[in-house]
Length: 262
Image (tube, rainbow, N blue to C red; front, side, top):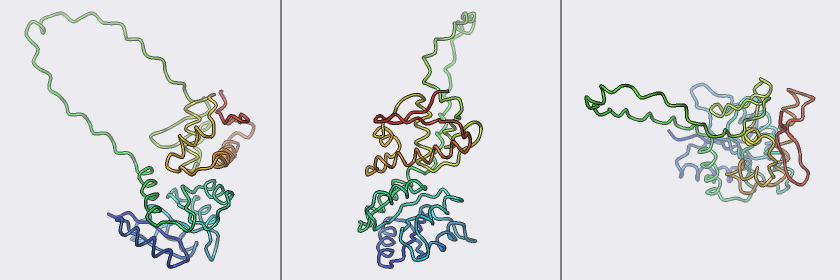
């Protein structure tokens, strides 16, 4: 079944160009012009599947696309790509901070937009469970071997040193793509989760902004340094909502960020 992409764009010509490129690439586009219409579609309609991704214009007639994304994140984790005619860095940072996955600045190539959509959908697709290895029949042991007494128990092999464990207040559930802080699950956007996961997996290690961008924003080569700062700020707010007096993420001026050791 073709994956559905919701286009939220009030300029019909732009929407038509995106829809044509999506249909050509095997997607099923759906178009609305208003933010309220988009939210209604994403809440679900009887007999209609929810869209797999939202292409969202920032400048809509009834409300800002930023507000649409902010409200959407209250009930949906569907990926969002912003369309914007604005080149200001702050608009892009705010969009990423409130939960967008990517942004495209007008004018843009519809084919490039479709390529970005494919990258994001591949990344968020659930990993297939590994197939069980087929059982291999053991050859029949010779009679002498069957009669031989069991070998003496061998002492257990020395285990290799373990990788650094996550800081105690955090519990990383990678298979569920969830992180618990002091026993409470955190409500994180996709990039917030990947950023915090990277820090949790390296407690006490100072990671530069460049290192974090390379590990977290692998599909967004145009990510700015300030995007990392914005996501750290939002993460700190969510962590302090659980533990107001704690400072789990530490800033190392001129170097980067680290997760505080317990």
